[in-house]
Length: 116
Picture 1 (cartoon, rainbow, N blue to C red):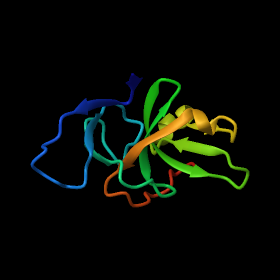
Picture 2: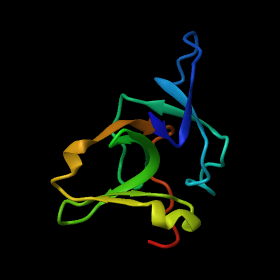
Picture 3: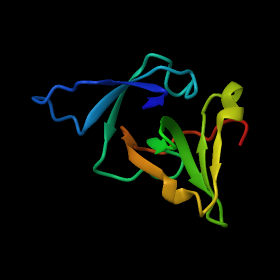
């Protein structure tokens, strides 16, 4: 699968709440997460609105903040305003093609991107 990440092995002896770890290969989430950052991801909880998650959509993996509007559209947002054009908007009909692989820990909502 293509995407914003490199999958890393995790230390099975250490239970830090992470189910897997990724290295962010893109600057799409700067300044929140820097390119090259180690992201700990849990599958044990769904991301809260404006939290960062790892999403599989059309064969590509994205690390994005998410939110939805009152019409049921799902938005996968880059934190980096220079990457705004890489945001995704999925209609309610397309949402079924998007799978959330996990929530980036600590799982709290992040500041809204400056352009939102």
